[in-house]
Length: 166
Image (tube, rainbow, N blue to C red; front, top):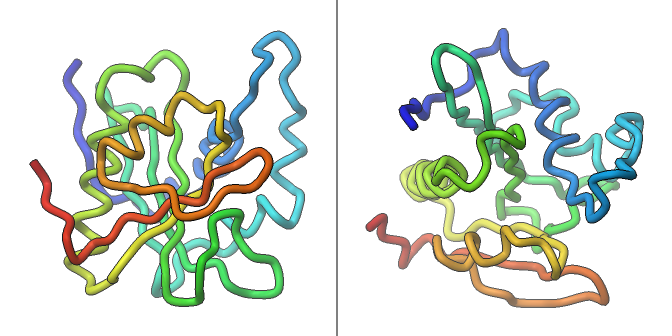
């Protein structure tokens, strides 16, 4: 599949609402949670007022259509991100529309973002993922390591000092 990875355009930032909803790991495809869930403070912090100095977003485009996004921001305010490790570490969110998953696009988005963050001088990046989410293997394959676990989730970090894109 031919796709292009590029920075998000300011006119496309509203798409992050769709991608935030798509990023929610839903075990039961026949009983999806309401889209209203993205308005909960612990999710809204991933997209609210996106475009601040530590906010970065890359999108995947196929045939002129944005089909996926990876974005990072430092979420260390009163409401913290699920994968928050400190106030200097950008936290990842990533998602693709269902029909574009399992085609290598997500891996490419992740690798491109890790390179961008390394080039910007960040030492590490973090994320949280449900233990039974198939994406955990992809995160490990691109360089994330489990540093902590809760009952349901892994907190993972990628050390950017050692990151090399293969």
